[in-house]
Length: 417
Ligand code: AMP
Ligand code: MG
Image (cartoon, rainbow, N blue to C red; front, side, top):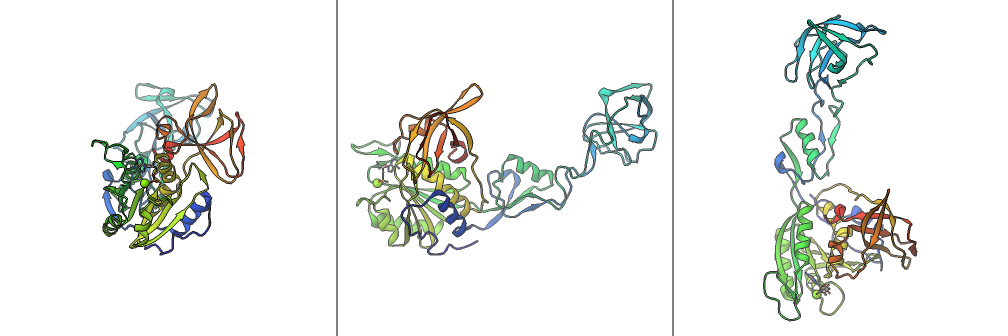
């Protein structure tokens, strides 16, 4: 567990490239949570706190990969059929209990331990059984259809590395190694609030000029998806004093505070004044489009992420900056979202210097996957994310692209579910 340094979000420049921002996070932010032991059934989505070193081989014993007959390969005649007496039986959970002898065949089933001395299994489809004797085809490779002890996981190796967010197969592997519980990081406790005098709770009446709060439910869902324990602090008015009280109270019982709205530089933006009264605030102006500054600060030592109010800007800045920052605070290792190469179904012009994230849908065209730009791209058009599949990423250096070019595509599923 660690305490962030006071100036961990200090940043003097004007525009910050995405890669530079991620490097700053990697350098300055560390896990702020302790660890705990949880049952395997509760461990899905949790972050492993220590390397899981295999205390045993998986599989623990050499065993058969098929139903058939275990033999000593040297007993086979190289150029014609061999007939051997079937003198024993080994099934999964029921070992033969002795070594095989030369000249014997042992009836064996998938998963049954290989009898000592047996090195090969002939599939039953390639054998003929008559009167307790089995006739085997020539030509099988020595060692065929035999699984080795430790071929899945070797005793002493790192089966799951610390920092891994546990998925179904990880839990399966931990169980295969005999674990019924795992040491994981405690859930990051996140206080989440929206700000804005115009912002109202869905399900209530909407006065003239007001809007419903789209961000809080969206960000809460994203945070829970990252394994955070979210406290809902509701909607806070645009009054610095009221905000300051809420933030100071939240800092007592949380590891992170996430806000949306109120952090641009307009005079109605009170989050900034509230935080500065309690700690420190830095603005990270990412060199991205669509982009809005993200406020990164500390309230009585607890980190705070202030996302922009426009829902698309909130989602994008969460994906690009918030997500890696939160994963790092929560103890997760470096996770690179998968980016795919697809064909651009549109031409695009941009100014060099910013990385642009263009909302697009994928459509298969014969053997090619083509990204089609979503027609509306305002920072407030949340339906554009609902109705498209991900971002085409156009890097800083370029001034645009031609239709038909190969481009990077980042699916929403990788970053904002
Ligand atoms: P702000 O960042 O406070 O300047 O807000 C930018 C835009 O986002 C304004 O149009 C706000 O009304 C809108 N907005 C702010 N908070 C929310 C929210 N929680 N849900 C939906 N829209 C919001
Ligand atoms: Mg506002």
